[in-house]
Length: 327
Image (cartoon, rainbow, N blue to C red; front, top):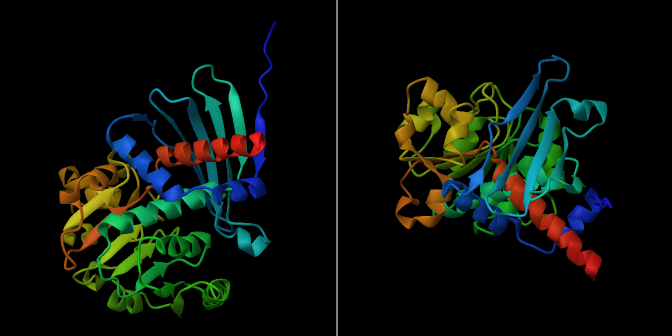
């Protein structure tokens, strides 16, 4: 007699409640360590780029598994960056958790792209935890979208600084950002001039879909740390590639992905760095000698998003859901 497998479908409201019960930063950190130790199988990213001038977008398919684990995960996430003009969110998606032993679908996480936002913000916090200066004077954020907001919120647990400056192209969006974050712990200033951030902030996070560098090499001051995460395709670029050349340390979440996308892709292509200079974040976490040495270093963490993050967050939510059911 055939056994029927019950597939759980977990919606966003439930996912958000479950997330209140665990620390995603520590879970994502464990994933990076496993990845850099070769314990994770992550095939190349699947992607589609949509060049509609009215509403350009992209869809990423990231998938993989941790060896000798119970599950494997397929994540589909898309961004259509003019959606807000249509009254729609700019991001969407879902995660599917499969049984690694028999291939059955254990659960579908209808997260509407939220788990991608959480795991990305968690990675930004991890990057700052190990590479930001000890004395952060002010945090600079490039980007007024949800990731720009979540990066700041997630940095609270690893950085004492509560002063921030936000860059955006639209004054209206900057004011909306300021209103949205009014109840946060941060003192927030806004600007449309990138030098305002590079002149006054020594921890900078870029999280835009820009295809044109937002920061030039001659803007970067001694002692600056930059976490760049918007450039997750070969077409996107937030940093002039010479910035990586002048950096004391260049870190990525995945060396193999850095060869095809992200800031390192452009710097490698332009001949400003070579692969031997790049270190994976998982190795930084476990080796103190590779972490920031002093507050004068220029450091870059280039995050393109690795499937192990999706594996870790999906497993944790599913396990949290099962615990809720038992109770």
